Image (tube, rainbow, N blue to C red; front, top):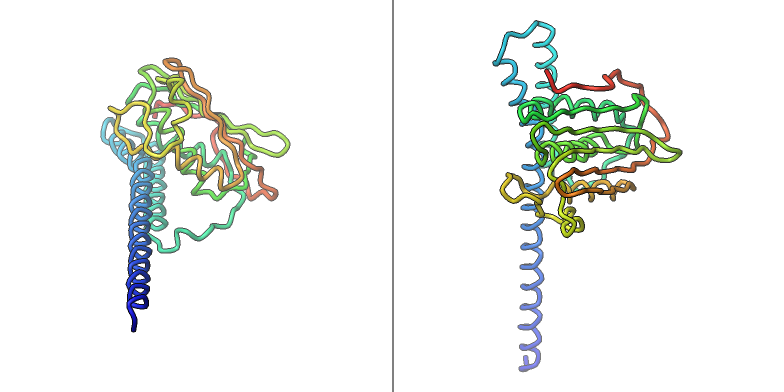
Length: 261
């Protein structure tokens, strides 16, 4: 074996080593990102559960109200298990089959779940939605998108502020809006808010993952997201999601909710 052959084999071995090392580092980074996103998504149902447990302990409740609150806690606990299951599954990269998802169902459950947190911050949370609106979107992913937007609108709001969520439709799309009277976004940061890790208010807790995840999910499902904000006045996010071609059985939901549970 001559010198050139040995040199070639050494270079080839080094190249293979560098490729393997790069792939290992990439996989570690991807796993770290998945864990961070999972922790971020777990915050919403945990916030809801703790809020309703606190409400149940605070004053005497009627049996009907207790049953309603326990039902919400049960739903949020199931959502926790779903998130943990999908986050820890080895098949998280597999594409899920889209289905007709009822917007009113998802929006109402999220608003009811986050209402104790809004009430604690003295923020009015309300929504209006046609109960017969369906989008071509997997339900868990729609839940992640809308819960992120509403949770941010509550977190970055001001005392005595408000969050309004609405859903309507045109010929091809369902239009979902989340509007708040919060701190708003500085003009120079408008183009940064969808970047991973960005937070408008650094002193508030969070991972800075929500809006980057929202845009990714919406884009992957053929939708669009638009941002309008005035610093010190408030912010509005608008989602355009494709209508479902086939509708499933409608589920009864309230058309509005007050933050006075």
